[in-house]
View (cartoon, rainbow, N blue to C red):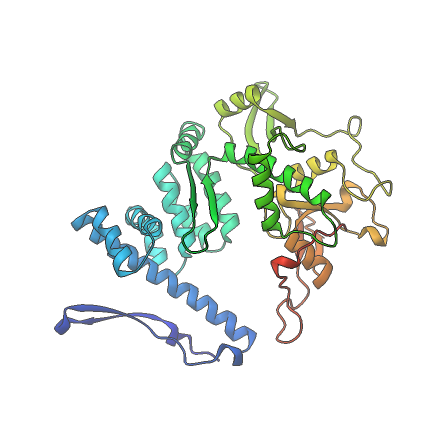
Length: 407
């Protein structure tokens, strides 16, 4: 078996040279000659080593910041570590936040939580009160996407103003960048927005992407990345073209019968909405009600049509919230027949689930299976018995080979 002690992080102090040397001992083994179990064990060890190094790095950066200020600390990272200005600024901010979170810092230094999870905790703590112990415990066993949602829920629960201050902070930190890359000569457009603005933008972009996909030659499809770029360009340069003009948000809320009011308002993906924001949205946006009744919407189309209707898609977004396989956005997922259409599967709600492009390929090309948890009733995409065989075909699909399937 692999001796993982050789992958440990060590600190060697050299007083005579007035230096502190950080050494990482890596096993002298060729990964190609290792078994799958050995490689996976090694990857886990590498992840823990990265976390421990990140914890020590945060302490070093924060000490530098305390003694010389943020500007000098950022300059050291840019010059000595050759970091970009953006990454240097992020590392300095994260290190300062982590030093104020003893449980998260301790878990990171011990390699018990991943670096990105620790940064999520630090960022949330900078925005408002959090339950640090609960989040650290969740970070030890939850994947990044699930943990990000756990953090958002905890922020909402711990907030004393229904999460309004968090939303205000996010709006204060909105950013946009437009520049020509010196490396590629390509024009780059990017931005960060608060969740409410982001949900509206994503809805419009997804509508435009589906519009472009429907107009494509099935034998010469664009990649998803190309389609996204073209959708964005068309929305900006040709705003009057096509159908993607309005903003329709699906907002979900529970009805308090006793007080006769809506409570626990949230976007379809579970992002919480402060009450004041819900009132504003009701006035300014076109909201799509998340209520579906057989008397008003036909949710079962049988074999009358192959693709899901708009009403069915809305109901799927309300029910599944995201890709059932990997958690990708519902707006970039497709209605998939659990029992394939070509095998007689009906276009009915019980036979439809949301899956992204990649998970769709896993199902059709690599025999992954859609299952339903008997207790929670949640659908999942499960791999075959050995999804990572030592020999044979793996589940990877290049991005340029991603036509959307219609089953």
